[in-house]
Image 1 (tube, rainbow, N blue to C red):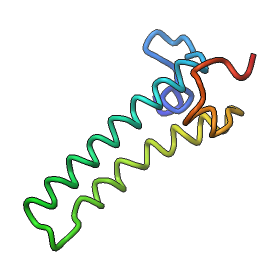
Image 2: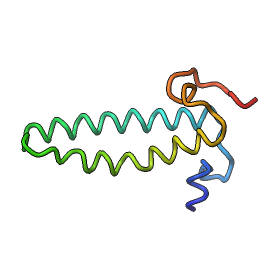
Image 3: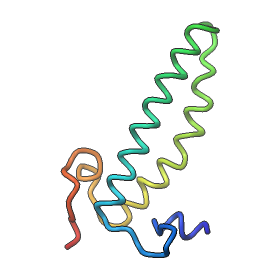
Image 4: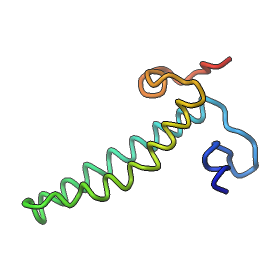
Length: 91
């Protein structure tokens, strides 16, 4: 199961395309950013003296970095992953 997650295999055991992997990463990155902003807002409202929102932020960052590293390891440049159009760069 761990290898299936790491290598981007979906439920029917078919491998994802590069475009799907990049799109999936960008969706997760957007969700991560939204969650961090929400946690920051809650932190500022409830206890502005202690930045507790950093702890879940760092914990949620770990799988995102693994996914980014997997894409980068597949030979996809970081510029393509973060800013480029979602298209095949390996074909």
